[in-house]
Length: 176
Image (cartoon, rainbow, N blue to C red):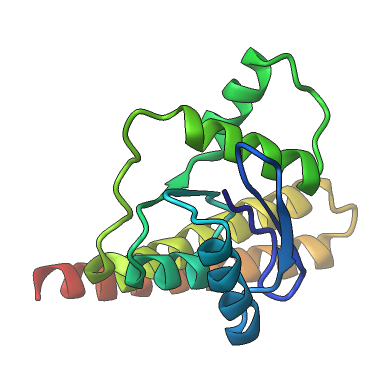
């Protein structure tokens, strides 16, 4: 039923059958409008795409609601689109595709347990540090100046220290 790209960017929502559409942001007013839309159209189940963390506010909101909801993986939706010979990609088409895919599921996958939200956020942060390390290493490989290469090396060392400290904190959190 739902698709989100950004917390403040309006996100498209589409119903199947019928293709009724709504565009909201995931702030308090937007979520209130979404709830009204869901009630008005008597929506029985909701699907939305995992979008790199932008969907967290929607996830928490739907978890607290009464309607079954599922966070769908982008790969699932890509394969579904391919099976329907759909190659074009934009928010409007994605919303329709997500609605169709959600309707086709016999059973919705469960939403993640709220108790793990903070841990998931910490793991996302760790992944972001690792992405930064890889990016700065690439910069260093292509730098022409030795001074710039040294700056990149210092930045990689700083990020690796940050990653190591974060891993230690995560390990303690998991043990606790």
